[in-house]
Image 1 (cartoon, helix red, strand yellow):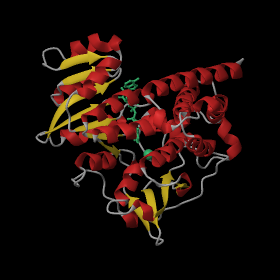
Image 2 (cartoon, protein in one colour; image 1 turned 90 degrees about the horizontal axis):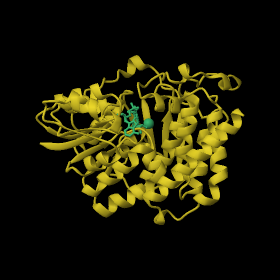
Image 3 (cartoon, helix red, strand yellow; image 1 turned 90 degrees about the vertical axis):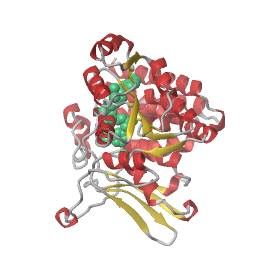
Image 4 (spheres, helix red, strand yellow; image 1 turned 180 degrees about the horizontal axis):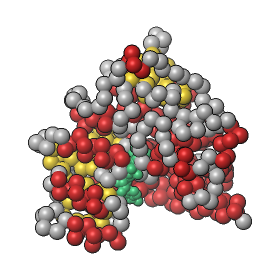
Length: 390
Ligand code: NAD
Ligand code: MG
């Protein structure tokens, strides 16, 4: 029996992982399941999978969780310290699928076990990539990407020499507004932004797909995972979301990863790695699909892509600032305080105001520094949003 834990179990990725694990109950022993406010879902899954412990991130929900698990023999805990405690519970495979910067501390802690961390929480890699990688090396842990593009790159690189890679191309669907005229984007509403043409995902990442902040995070993520120069990373708009990424080699070959837009593939690959196992995703009918389209991304429409390059160039703590400022800008868009195109303006302004503090050697970065940077970036972003409204 493999011992598995899922952080962010009640979310879109967490639920897909549970779908896979629940199909083979004899293979997995579930250790910890964590969630937020959706206590009914957390308790239901904890009972069905006979988890050892269920954790809600928010202490005010502990009573509800205890009530929902009464008589089950499953432990209930709550809060940030409880998440860290859950990350210490021995497991062979730990999925980091909390959304946002909140996923960093438990993910980083889980690496100390020296086992496998399947990482969906791309924000932690953007905010503290060098720190996560150093910790993984120190404790002999393996980080496996759970993002469709990065899983695709990882798979295309099996058996290959990274020195023979010329370029890495990640695809972007273009999100909800890819066909809108540029001048109309300022009027994009929340309702439309949270509807994705191809993928069924959490609210935040869906809006980030429309603004390409998601792709911006993924460019930085690619830079952290794979040992290539930033200039070797390209983004291409691919409306069908069937090709997830391509790796180009020195002989001109392009290895493309093609599959349905279903995160259970990337999760399943990481779950079965280093072997391949059956994953119940739809099999593509290429004749029915007919054609695949590709177009160059327009950086005027998606300024987040330009910002991602600047973040990589600046290094140090800039990624932590970028991620935190993006989270605040996204909250402000969801809250109706700023418009769709203002999100990138706010983030750029925060980057400008904090740039001199963020320049630092990657080797000296600690979790505490990332936390302080994250906090300062959030304050700065809130100030900028307030000033705009005044
Ligand atoms: P989601 O919003 O559906 O779920 C988020 C999970 O995090 C929930 O379990 C929630 O309870 C928990 N959570 C929220 N705030 C928390 C906090 N402060 N502390 C602790 N837990 C908290 O999100 P999702 O779409 O499943 O995305 C999860 C992660 O996976 C994100 O980092 C996202 O970028 C990444 N990802 C998602 C997809 C996708 O298809 N949904 C694809 C690639 C990568
Ligand atoms: Mg992705």
